Image 1: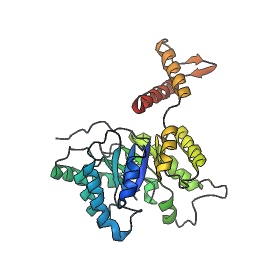
Image 2: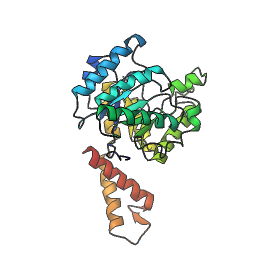
Image 3: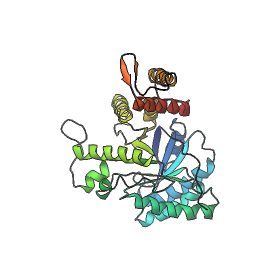
Image 4: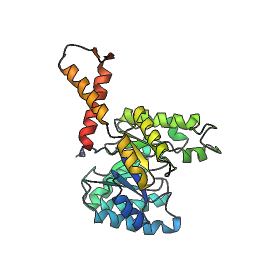
Length: 299
């Protein structure tokens, strides 16, 4: 029998913490992040990976109540032996697995099959462990971002990154002279955004690496939100409040959205309506409804 999992709770902020650092995991717990990602990949030295797996599992088991903060785990790439060892953390019922360096939705399907077996083995609710691929880290991935729709009921989000793909493309830098991402990385960003919306899952924006530059982070987060991203990854607890604020509807947005919804409700026969000198149609109504739903979620 195919089990349909509970609806996915959206998250504005996903904070990376190395799974081999008790101190950083404790700081993450107090950061206000909607989700922590316990990292077994890039932020853990190879000699510490085994220790990190045990610590991640202990941490998951010690925090069964995830109502305030989701707990995710980033494993190693699926084609490595390390990834299969990493999946021992399934016994701690993480909210999700972040899967790096994917090539296409086939990797999500493969991981989903592993999780089917592990959930049964560990007595965990079927389908409860979600998947978020880092969907732009290999050259193949850029050609397959339309492949995620319908791939797995576990798919919760897509995110992107510009570091690994730059290395894979032989680039010496991923930014232009003006400091903005070079065209190919802007393309990766756009394809991730479109791919996530096509699949009906959350598009999560990539990291802002300079954690001391809060103004830069605020601007970057605001721009991501305007593009249609619904959350962002943090690499430092100090970034969380800024990210949460950027992805939470403001008082002005809420007031406007209420006005839009109300005017359409009181004019049921009309497809276009004038409001405060602006012409509104169905996309405006949908956006207003989305903003109000988001506000309810994070109230």
